[in-house]
Amino acid sequence: MADSSRTPAAPALSATALGKRVQLPGGELVILDGVAFAIARGESVAIVGPSGSGKSTLLSLLAGLDAPTAGSVEIDGAALSTLDEDGRARVRAEKVGFVFQNFQLLPSLTALENVMLPLELRGDADVEGPARAILARVGLGERLGHYPRQLSGGEQQRVAVARAFVTGPSLMFADEPTGNLDTATGQAIIELLFALNQDAGTTLVLVTHDEHLAGRCRRTLRIEGGRLVADSGRAA
Image 1 (cartoon, rainbow, N blue to C red):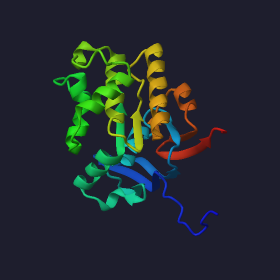
Image 2 (cartoon, rainbow, N blue to C red):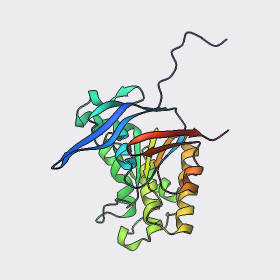
Image 3 (cartoon, helix red, strand yellow):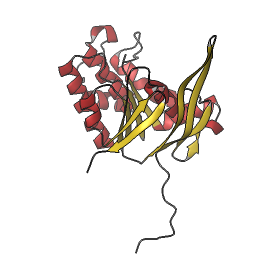
């Protein structure tokens, strides 16, 4: 019989009254204002909205890459605002993966070395084995020694996806992951991203202007003018 007194699990990610304002010579610019939502473990969520609406800023706040001027973000029930930069970096290393529009691979490192890097930074004893395995999984088992300049855009993004998943994160952030790719290559990356996400049971939060990509997620958050204006879920 289920234990009805058990405390419900904390959301994978939550935002409470989240705001971001910056001071400019002409006055205060409101980038985000009063954004609030919770994301359950294993959910896939797209953040959509017009250019300049605050989507990427929101993603940076959720990931602890930037600090809000109001409100709070919690990952697995732990408030990022209670942590210093080292603490936030530790949370990112242990729980978070990233896929960026411009890949953000280190040009002086090979594909294998780029994927090994987060494992090395975390202090793992075995870094090469998992890196080789995930690169084989994304179809780059024969390109381990290639540098980013020797890879196509699609191949670079596959390396970036492999790097994001190699640490076994519980939470994956993707910022316009197909933005720099042609349609066919972008579609292949989408399929790969969702296949890996399903295999790992990761919570996925992605920013996109691509309605097709957003439609692959179970839920869509729409941001306009720095405010959350819609929160819609796809039927199971």
